[in-house]
Length: 258
Image (cartoon, rainbow, N blue to C red):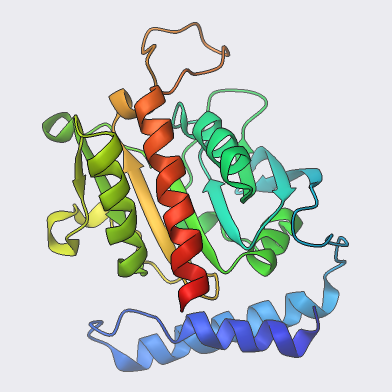
């Protein structure tokens, strides 16, 4: 991808900065900074060849973000992506991302922490230009489903759907309501807690061409073994896995109908 293409894509998503912000000058400055940063990185980027649609290309990168080492595993498939930024911290999200992506032929990017106690870095601060796998992921996909976990005691059966693509959020809510009815799918923006809305313009879920949906899952929706041994794989509930799979398929249809 050429630098001009990166700058054009940066213009697209930078224009989606929240229109309700009070300080227009601050928003304009942020957009300019985003465009400049990604255009500069595009010039320096060394791209990994991407195969035709349907080809699997997997790459693993060790990347340090704010002093924390992450293992980022990227599997290139279609132009719909599944992302788990906090796979080492929010149990079950890495397993869900890999399984749902494999079932739907979606591109997948999972971040885990190979050593030490898991550290939570906010999503918008994970969007660092020196992470090549994230750059390749964002270049590949047009729409993304970003899986996260929450531990809100007053919402232990609620799945919150954030992100800037509200049509995608509603489509995902429909799949969850149909196939995982024991959980409440919350897609109305005002009903999603402010900290879970995923609207920061630097959040990777908002950096693709069509934006995306941030899925915030309670513990019961991402593991059937809350008392598992540390380091052992999670076992996400089959109904939630099926619902998310159906939701990603719906988003693929939605993506290509626009």
